[in-house]
Length: 150
Image 1 (tube, rainbow, N blue to C red):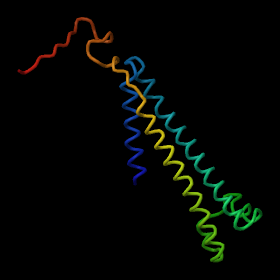
Image 2 (cartoon, one colour; image 1 turned 90 degrees about the vertical axis):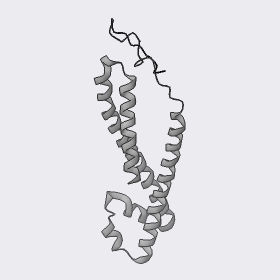
Image 3 (cartoon, one colour; image 1 turned 180 degrees about the vertical axis):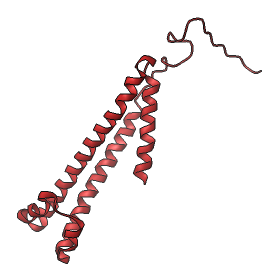
Image 4 (cartoon, rainbow, N blue to C red; image 1 turned 90 degrees about the horizontal axis):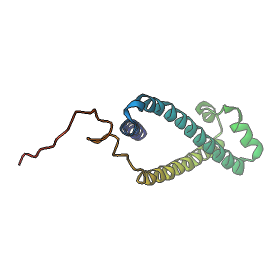
């Protein structure tokens, strides 16, 4: 749920940022580019985190059960919750600890990457000249005046 809320907030803000920084003539291309870039980035991110998780889990299983047993358990993608339930209690405990250990590393890495991205977002500068009143993009003959209610 927390991930869904975070992604929902992120998706709208990146789209709005793109729309606010693109010149009107490029608005369609700019907003149309956001979705494929987001999709490709998400796919690469999931693949990278999955590879880290599998690598950490395989390493943990190799340390505890030996190289051959770890290879048998992790190769082929045949480790399902049902197959883990069918294991002996000792083997099941080792597999569960290896799985959570791999997941822990992925979550810590993702949190650090998110913190770095948040810190770098402070260096992003907006282009205020594109949409402000009175710029070259306004129609000639239309003049905006601001009056105070004093």
